[in-house]
Amino acid sequence: MTKKYIRIIPFFLLLLCLCGCGGKDKYLPFPPLSKETVSPEREAALQAALNGSLPTATPETVLSFIEPSPVVPTFDENSFFAEVNPTATEEIPFVIEDTATPTPIIPTATPLPTATKPYDPNIMMYGTSNGLTTYTMQEGDFLICLGRRFNVSLGHLMAQNGISSPDELGVGDTVLLPRNPSPWSLMDGYGPQRLILHPTTYITKDGDTLFSIACSFGDVLPEDIAKQNQLVLGEPLPVGLSILIP
Image 1: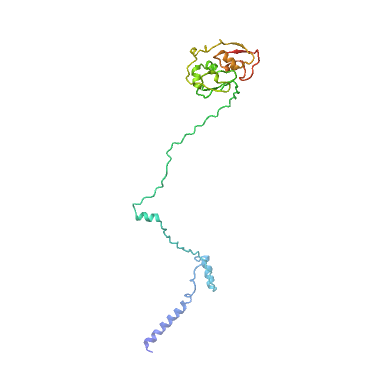
Image 2: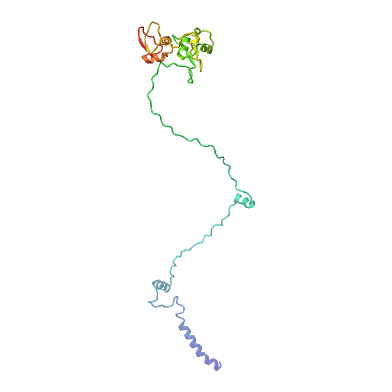
C-alpha cells in the first residue's frame, strides 16, 4: 500500500462506524414519537407492530358504480311516417252530431182526486159529440115526436132516413138526425111544435112512459122530466103519479 491509501483508511473506518450506529433506528416500523403527539389509535398500531402483529384493517365501504342499462329507443310507426311525409295530417274521427232539438220534459201536476160522478141513467146517447146525429127509438116514441122534440122538419127527417111515411120506424130503430136541418114547420101539416103549455103538472095514466109523456107535450125532452122528478128513464110509471113537466 502506498501512503495515500493508508491515510484514507482511518476515515473509512470512522464512516463505517457512524453508519453502523445510525442505522439502528432506521429500520423501526414507525419513528419514535412523543406521548404528547401520538393518538391512541396510532399508539395501539405502534405497539402491535413492536409485538409482531399487524392491526386489523377496518373494512371500508366500497361504493360500487352500476352502469345504467342503455336506453333503446322504441320505434313509433306513426311518428316515423309523419316525418317521412310531412304533409300527412292526423286522422280526425268522424262524429255524427245529433242536431235534433231535444223535447223538453215538462212536469205535469198530479191531479187531485175528485169525487166519482154517479151514473146517470137519464143521459141519452145521441150519436157523436159533434152534434145530434143518431137516435134510437124508445117505447112511446114516434118519428113525428122526434121532429117536434129536436125542432126538425118532418119532411127533412123522412128524407134523411129514406122513408116516405113517419110510421115506418118503430122501437129499437136508429133514426138519422140531419145536421143543420130545416126547423119544424106548420107547412108540413102536423100542427105546432108545442102541443101543451108547460111548465105544468101531469098525472100518469096506464101505459105512460116518460117518452110518451114528452111526445104529448111536443117540445119537452124526457131526460128533463126524469131529472125534474128524480125518475129513471125506462122504468114503468105507477098510475096516478103526479109529475112536474119543466
